[in-house]
Length: 50
Image (cartoon, rainbow, N blue to C red):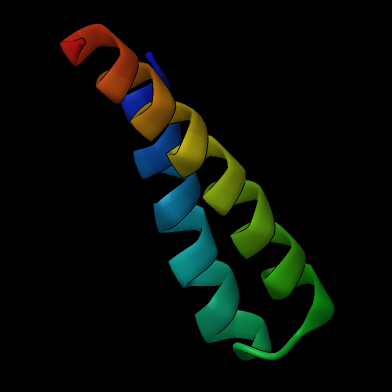
């Protein structure tokens, strides 16, 4: 499920940010990937509500 994938990625992002720092390129890339998943989730949620 997409919500579970988002939560897993979010936990990984927090851990990565604590280990490497919030400005590390790997952290920023993972954050962008998480943003993409969140947008997909929101689009599906809004589409399902209409």
